[in-house]
Image (cartoon, rainbow, N blue to C red; front, side, top):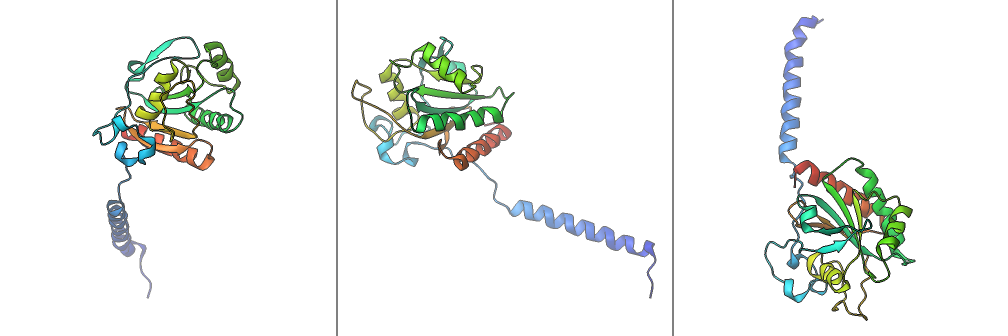
Length: 221
């Protein structure tokens, strides 16, 4: 028996409706991806300053630092931006060059995105003056409009690493004998909340960082 083409149309339409319904149902059954909001209790106690433990609604703390242009910058200057932060020093021969090269990848992934700011904090601020930071930034092709290399008071920077970003394991007071050396890169959303911590020396983890930045941009968070 032969079927006329016209007689197949209702069946084709029914199949299309069925396929659409299945696709919609599948999408609705999939878990909605979200980035966690990380607070002090989500980190191992060794990286959380005692003053910050068990705080609710943690947000990064105010800061006053100087960037590679010689400009004084504060928390108000990055209000409403997504932040990618790390701690480094220009004379570091080991993890810091790798992290900085990986962060260049992050910068290059968002050539025209005004909502993203990278902030690299020097842990040897006495040695990393503004001219030294400017030369280092230029070496890595950092755009000062989107990527700051920061210096300032050592105790202040070290307090930020421990109380604001929870990025290092060592206890200390930011004094002469204190030294922070960490591969951690911290992602902060527009509201100042920590949304992820990544190994800045690992290409796969930096790929995940970029994917998570995409998510925050799309979600408006």
